[in-house]
Length: 489
Image: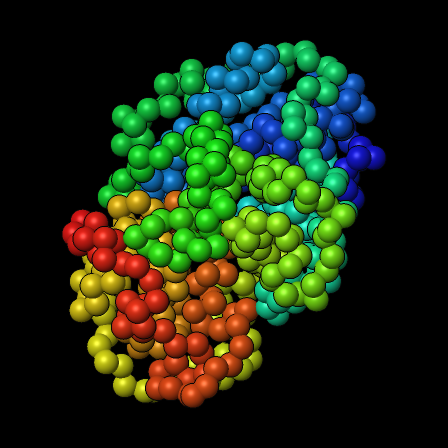
């Protein structure tokens, strides 16, 4: 375990390993991958140290906030892929799809009781954060959560970064050291004890694995208590699909990213966030692939901190530098902020100046006020906003540039900032396949001033918060074909 960066390890209780345990349990919660995974690597190291087999446990609750058929199916596809890999490569993997609330936590407790210790994924928000804070105190074995989220470990920052500029300064100072200590490509290759784990009928009959129970199907999904109106997407939730999209982006869109990412008609964005959110692909491998496409004379020796400035740190191709800043700085600032901010999803987590100005303008008359249902159904007077909402409902995403306008208009069309926050979080977390993510909370709260500064002139409703309009958007980006494409559901 000496190769594991200690900053990534969160020891959640003070229990000693159970020498009578049958296996080391790796509970795969959010970084749902078998490659480039620090948590899986840590679990393998413990299994080798104790001379025990390893059990990889992956499950899906039917009782989580904002659950939809869309999210469920995406996760299920990845679980089915893991099932096939486990059968082919011969390691212990147990998949479980919950049919009734309470089955999943009961199964976990039974597996934990049989284990020497538990290793799982560290994640700073949503149900994973709550589980990792509460469950360890109920167990008799050690519980470790491992940060495999990004390049810069969340423990490396001492407090929540106030802005992307501040976090970028840390990133530039620490990037090379962190990047040169990557996760192993295939940690399971190091596993020494490959004995098969026998859970016994008391477990397997009460909680049958997903394949045996015939649950990897849309027919099974149709009978589960999730929002069935939010349909599965055409994209697949497998690592294979994520890698295919990665190759397509790197080969055809990466070098032009800086010039084309903001134009909805061009669609020059990576569109990798679904697989990043569910951990199907690792940020480490994406950064490595991108840097390998730098000019031949580029070297890591050229990496010099730029005092937080975006341009100049990575150098080389401008498209590569722009994308890496989005992937590392803007993605990871959300993880670090949430790690240090338990109320990351509350109005009170905004900067003081933003809270003050929005509260001061709370009574300002709105040009129009829409209900949540009208917004969800794209029933507004603004054709750009309606198109963005239809894309969200249809494809589970909004073009990156239009997402900013989408949020700003909701602030303008709701009675107050707290209502706007509630609506945006609900719309995003229900429809976006990459919702319920630190990065998506960064995007939503940026609308209200997080990671931004006070702007002038002071305006009605917005106060000192940055202002955006549909008219200015039409002038800045190419949007004609986008409006045609999303003119209707």
